[in-house]
Length: 268
Length: 302
Image (cartoon, rainbow over all chains, first blue to last red; front, top):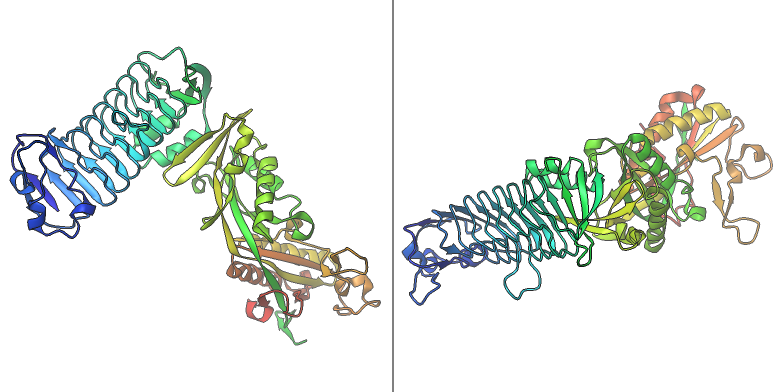
């Protein structure tokens, strides 16, 4: 099933209805009447997209725009592929399936992800996988792969799951992590793992500033990393290669529980 | 009893009687095949019979690095017991004492199952609060800090209720040397069969047992009917030319695995022939009244 963007929308759109489990069983006319507006001015699918019917389990959105918000929200299965950029909260609260973005994603991509895979070819905005204001936890499962870089506070309050950022990460990567794993292929900004309790962060090229509340535990070649590399390899070859290196382990954040860890690669 | 003869080896027209068991499997890896094997040998030590050891265990096969989860050399170990609780107890104790302690080791689930046994979930407390839980997809692991780095252990492993224990071959020869040669050939052939083990030393038992004893509280005692030195004194099952008997006991994750192992053993004995090996093959049973699995030797001929 393909949605081709007719033109740049006049307002931000909520694309959360365009997911496989909500499209299944609907006719073309019913889908074209689905409302996507986020203001008082009504906007239907037919006004914004040219619809080509097909398998609702495989949704394709052609023509991206940073005004397309909440794509793949709460997906339970199937696949959504976007050829272009997307707005905020792409893949938020997904429990299954696969969301592929051939472009850049705005803030809160994969926010509160519970399952499934989110793959972003370009860059991700701030709070990748993070919670919205007032939420106790960010990502709770699933896998996020960003082939570019990510903004600040990637993996904020992450509880479970895996985030792979092949490029750079902004400041406070893995801030307030509860658990889970995050790999940053290149350099991270200031203070990664800020106030993390548990969890694992791997930084291929280190970071601009490390918090003094992380303590050096030496350089190690751990079996767990080899094992992890085997799982990561099908998702990201560079990340898997990073995990196969000897890595320097820092334990922290000692300002809180101190059961977390940051591994730093040789390229630091 | 009708006797079949294949290439000069007499094969009794009888059957091995075997029992349902609970079983599990783990994969042990290490930095080298030597250390993976060492941990597996330690873990499967003193595990020849459920009567005295709590479980029966053995190395199913050694694994190349590309066959293991962490891409290091490894070994797959099978454990069998008569109850789930005893199997859990033996698994946790043996992995804790023999694998966790072995240099460079890691331990993973070796069998999938709807039911599971606690593996790392039982051992994680050794980490004294420094243990780290890691989930990759559907897999859950524990990282436990130890003095050479970390012990990585999968949280659970599978349990099967379809396992069978007690498949057996009685190998009867003229001398101890020829009988042992036949038993060694059979044990080597059985070792190549996947999902089956022969838990006795080197796969071979020389002290086969019968149920009960003249002494109170002794559940099993020597199988006098197959003791050559008692041939004239008891109701013997041996011919006049029999000088030595060895037994191979086989446990398998499935009944089919036991049958395949017994078939491989019979074929190896027959191939060796009566001059260099055994002159007769038989099997132990209890009249077919105790065990639900019957492996008739006539169905296992090469």
